[in-house]
Amino acid sequence: MNDKIYLLILGCVALETLIMLIITIYNLIRILFQKSKRVYGILVGVLFLIEYFIIQAFLLMSKEGNLTDAIGFNNKTVELILLQAAMTVVVLALTQNVRRWEKKTLAKASLKEGLDSLPVGLLFYWECGMVKLVNTKMDSISRLLIGEGIYSGDEFWHMLLSRDMGILPSEKGKAKDSGNRNECIVRLDDGSVYSFKRSICVFEGHNLIEIMATDVSEEQLLNEKLKVKRVKVDEIKKRLQNLNSEIESITVQKEILATKSKVHDDLGKTLIMSRKFIETNDEGLGQEVIKQWKLNTLLLRGEENDSNIFEYSTLINDFSKVGLKIDVQGILPKRKEHKDIVITGLRTCATNALKHGNAKTLFVKITNTTGRTLSSFNEKKYLQVEIRNDGEVPDPESFSEGGGLGNLRKSVERIGGNMNVECKEAFKVIFRLPAEGGKGNI
Image (tube, rainbow, N blue to C red; front, side, top):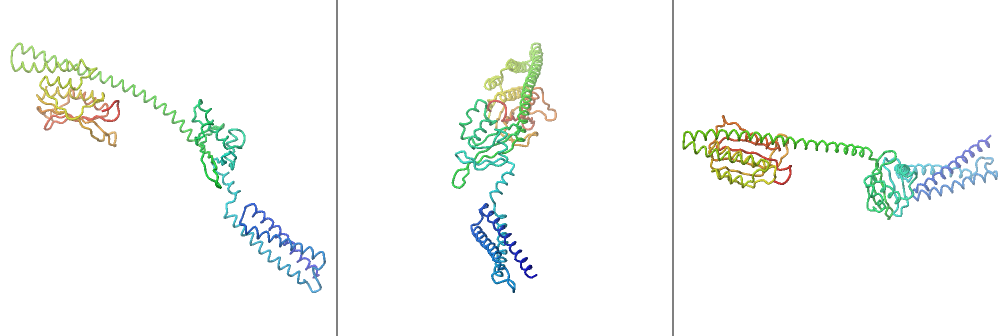
């Protein structure tokens, strides 16, 4: 009965030894594959040899029949069992250490698995074109483009350049010569769009070329929609510009018609005054008639030149002939849009100064300034024109803008400016014209 128990115990120890030997072989394979610490490899190798010799010792003892004696286990058997128990503890402890090291260390398999899980495509290859690493995403992109995997990094990059959406059809044949290009955008057969970027990194002392592919399908779709909308906006803008030109032309014609009507009304009044002077031969009335005829002559000349407004010098000389000096401080604008309004303002203010204020001098001050408008809180540059005279100041309560000043205000506001009229110490007209926009220079 005791012999059976002894045999059962020894059988269990032998089985344990075999299991430990298998675990040792497994650990040795893991360490060699993962390139773990060298000390682990040496220690597992020694454990493998010891376990192997213990197995051989059990087999030898079983063959010679010296497993037991009359008393029980002999000394050799007990020593072998104790040795195996110690080996079991060492093997299990080493297995646990190897497992901990694997969790803390990034292995090649883990790195490849991580790269394959990325949403971007990655390709690494040497300068000669030989592929070093390609993840699953880049491999699937390659199969959609060329129907097979990537075998040469250089050929794959040149193929991408030839399909670049940014290259004109006439330039696609030169894609292989564009070695300095490191970015391209390619549309795949499934309709998705990818952005490819090439860069150089150093690995183990050698240059390694990396190609990264990023899905930009949504961005490309937005860009295409923006292009379509931009075309529509340009068409609407062009139509608005044409409409604005027509509105300006109609407004100018309307203002010209109003001016002509006023000139004709003034001319009729002057004819009545002239008839009255002839009948009464009143000298005071005669001076007034002469003054009115001179003003009407200036207005008629302005009417004849509506399509080609007087130059500044001509306007100043004409008014100096009727006794009104125009004193200009600053630089008169050269931009046609500004010049037309300034000349209209000078003519209107000079006529009013002679007709209503009996003025001798018209003072004009032109400066560059900045300010804000009701439609914009940003500071903008303006050309400010201030016109005042030394004549009589009208009563602020009874003053109202006539056709001349009203048309001037419309012209100023039409290009984004503003205008103020003051009746304090002197009659003053101030209008500001936007310096930016329009054609030409100030």
